[in-house]
Image 1: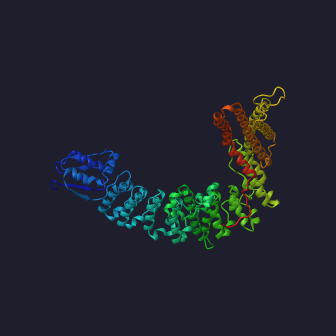
Image 2 (image 1 turned 30 degrees about the vertical axis):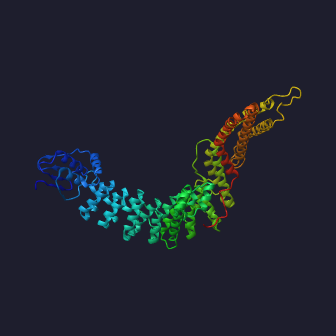
Image 3 (image 1 turned 90 degrees about the vertical axis):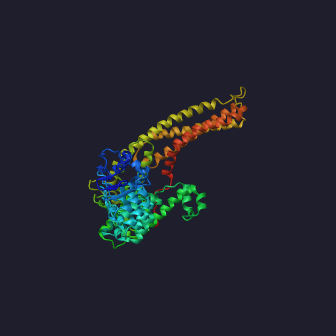
Length: 626
């Protein structure tokens, strides 16, 4: 060794430092801190031999990030000691616990300059070194998402994009998993065709599946256009592209659940609008709706490409792939996917799952009305309604085993009402002899329905009685107050005629009319709540009679309370007529508060009852292909 030089030898498990005699101990310790990030086992110097086994890993990483412009702080050491450095790399050092190299750590930390220096120093094959989980440095960079690191490595070794991890994931898939779209796009275009179309198309199908899952539909569409057979290929989890689409119902309009004004925006927004910067600045409030429509457009385009590959040339395994995806879409209510598949291959509607259920049986089982309505597209729907599964059950039997909410609220009334509507709709479409069909347990659909509805009916009955009891108390209180107020009018009566003193005043007329309205409507409300308490609670009563009584009771109670507060406000105005300008804002505010509270608490329930009872039906018999 020549005096005045530092020679550093890096081997897999050893770091050897040949230092000049005047090198300070602080310098050795600083350098060992960096080397401990690679768990170097031994440190030697020509003037002193010391072993450092307990250097803090966090300190090493913190120091490495502090001097991110230098690899291993070599430049810093050179400037501090005043000596040039002679660097010799025998092999990339590793951390024994995880088998990470310094290149893995720098890639994961996003240290671009460090990575570039390392890539320039090591051999091309060293880039393929894996840690204990089978991750190359490129795979670690895919987690970080810095495209510059990937470009640096791929330019040196183009095979890196084809090396999977220990779990058989390509770097492009890892980038998608961590939401790094820019990195995913670069790695996708860098991945060779033969990798994506290898035996079984597993890798290509996996890339396609994760691109759908992460909503990178531009990649998905291009993959299907280049490699059409990926449409029915299975990924490493045994799932197809259609199955992934079925798992993402939010990617389609049928799951959007937009409000009225949002639907208007959705209909009239044009996708090309947001290419204009001025329009973007003026329409940021509707950007969310625009982005939703863009996702729906891209997913529908992808669905159309996939469906074009579904034809009668598919083998049995590929047909099973489509059937599994179709049934999953039914369970999640992805109407667009079901229509798309049936449009290209309508015969699939006859194929069953492992339990022998058709897609329309599944639609009934999962209460997907929009999916069930599709049965009216086919002229042979009568034949489909009488099909039986492996348990001897027809489509009417599928109304059993609905999950029950054990809470006792009025919403239980709406739930059982919807269940009865399902039963009546399917019953009306079936021949009479099928209604008495028994399954393998010797039970008809009506018997199964009675069993499954027993708890739901009990909960609904208890919830309605609790609401009726509370409503009666409030109603009787209002009746009592308003009856007394009618004979103790504000200002008193004329001693000679017996007429109220303020009879000619407009405010008095408002008071007396409001009092009468409140008294009458509260009385009706009490009577309707009594009718609810004394009902038979037969199953058919939950379809129309009980909901109608609850709607009338809640509506009249709300009207009576509103009228009562108006009468109260009119009385205060009469009493404080000389201080009208002061009393007006206070009285209006205070009298409005109970009405607002009642509306906030009960109006959603009331409106839901009205829509469920008198609103448009979820069942439509005039269906057209999309």
